[in-house]
Length: 148
Image (cartoon, rainbow, N blue to C red):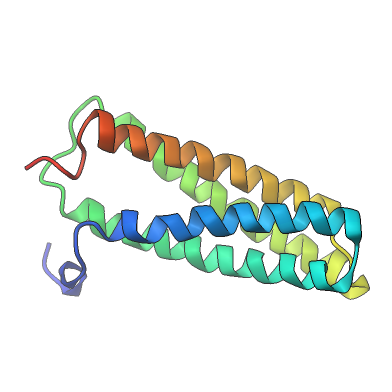
């Protein structure tokens, strides 16, 4: 691959993706607490964490493309795992966007947390967990990205 993307290290995805995981969990927790407490603080905290989660997920996706570009080949048993890993990452981002839209539409106007947005944020947590599990399997079981 020729271009500026190789100015970044091949390990950029695992360096960035942990922010996505942490922020997704924090957004889910803030949504759950905010759904019970229903204060303007939790409504804002939930919304800000969702927005930050979208940025982190997009950054992790871009970093994943960069890290994948360093791979000389993808072993046959790993290819379906990698495909599913990418899909789960996309679903994570999609549910974060949906949760943000729902919170903006119904929660923020009333300084409350939208329970529907919380459900979507928790679903995003499930998808980021499954994506992380597959990512770990690809690295620790198959050595993807660490073997020459």
